[in-house]
Structure formats: C-alpha cells, structure tokens
Image (cartoon, rainbow, N blue to C red; front, side, top):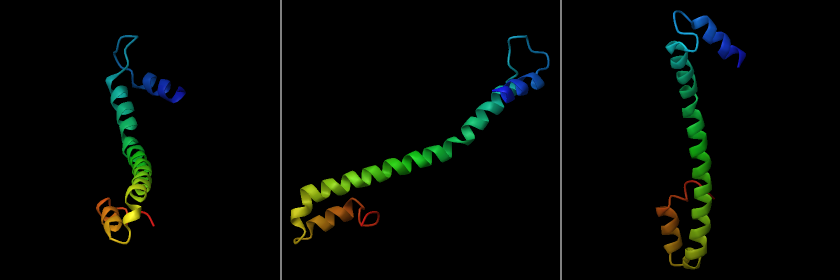
Length: 86
C-alpha cells in the first residue's frame, strides 16, 4: 500500500488534491491485467480436471456395463477421456 501511495505522490503534477493522476490508474490497471492470464489458465485447468473426473465417473456408472460391446469405449473416446485419464 505504501508503494502505491508513493507512486501516486511521485506521479502528481497539476491534479486537484483529491485526484489521482491518470498514469497511475493506467499502470495499476495494466499491472492487474497482466496477471489475469496465468490465473485464468490455472483456474481453467482445475475446472477441466474436475470435469474430466466427473465425466469419467458418469460414463463408468451409465456405460460401464457395456464394456464387452465396445459402447463404453466409444463413449469414453467421444468424451475424450482416453487421452486424459487412465
């Protein structure tokens, strides 16, 4: 917080006393946005992993009895499970 306050103070030029310089807003927003991609990818990978587990359970529950006919394998292939889970 001190760094932000210091940045605001050193960036001030002719702003009104209660105004934050636009450059401060731009840099803080850019800094915040620069971290979003990594966080979004990490979140997506977690959700994808949980979804794959759920689909694996559901396909086993509803199609597991069809292993001998090949239907279970076709459903797993269609759900793309064979490339992600053992």
